[in-house]
Image (tube, rainbow over all chains, first blue to last red):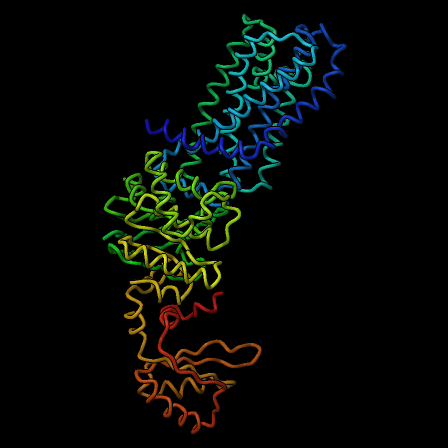
Length: 253
Length: 322
């Protein structure tokens, strides 16, 4: 199939570029590491309290991973703007390469790096010895991480094509991602929130992502979040990837 | 015919206003020729090229490119054309070889075939010794050669070059002209845009002059210049330009007189006289000036250039645009 072959080509180019600049992959880990060592200790007394039934660290670390997936992929559009300016995208759009592959290849490379960063973070957190990790759950949690990264990378690439400038991109992404992060319960679980805020969170797909990650991390496979999260994220991903691909095909770069 | 267009139009919407970038272009490009689209910045050159290379959809009109309908068979058009944009399209952190192999594969070549072809192309464009260096270390001329190399990896029938020599130093520019001629020798047709008069004149077999989104003249450079006149006499007058204009216009051997704007600093206005035989006309003109007690600030006799063609069609000089 041409789409798969082309996607692989675009993906391998993006991965090669990632590996040429490994510094970035490490830089993206710095923020969660700060949170892990400078913020997480504040939560330790909450162990066993409402919202922290799985344990303080067991609640915080899965959220932290989703946060990294959120920020790591929401900013990939910046790289695309540079490529647009250099004419790289234009050059590829004149070739017979599949339009969806141009988008999917880049998106999947972000998914790959996010998965590796997530694994690195879990291992680092486990090494502190302050939490119990249910490893089969972590494997399933990575699926949620992949969907999150996939969706946001697509949105970010689509926005990059519309906005075409880093100056417009930074405030747009921040305005979008900050509230999503705050009402997803990453920092503090949403059960601590007043009723109205909890109601708002019910409409935030990443709230489900965070909750599902926590339940999987703790091994509560029968929680309804575990199936709700992939269904909601999966449906949204399909819509947003379709939208971003259209933007890619029609881009007036 | 490699390209045939009929009433090609492109309208952009910008802040609620409609801007007609290209207003009905009819063009024909033959196999194996170098065809130039000459015009000032903003004339619609790039927009026309972007439509023909499938990057943007025309608002109206039809085009057949390499035997395929542009609107319905964009995929087939893409296979037969190469395109080199103004920005080039290389990424600094990648080597020339990597970019070329990737490019070949995007055109459907196998990895092996693409690697072999990349070596051929690197040699042809004298990039062999830099093949495995990152593109960001390249000079402007080397980078431009790589851009073109990428455009012909798949041996297209037709290569689009958008302002191929803009920003190049004179030496790299001369090299680029040689590359274009060499490609033509090997049978590749070239469609290029330029705002350089000498480039259009020296490089193109045929050209079209575009202004405000419309083709104002089309033909070989020689034929276009012949249409203007045999010779051009440019006379600079410090004042009384209108009087001089009438004086020259009254002479029956002067086909046409164009009076330019007076230079605000010197007050000198240039009058351009189109005459059949400049050498014969010159003494007559000087006598006429003397008789009217007008002394010219400058006088120049030259063969008509493409700028004269442009001037005659649009009333403006292409040189003044920059």
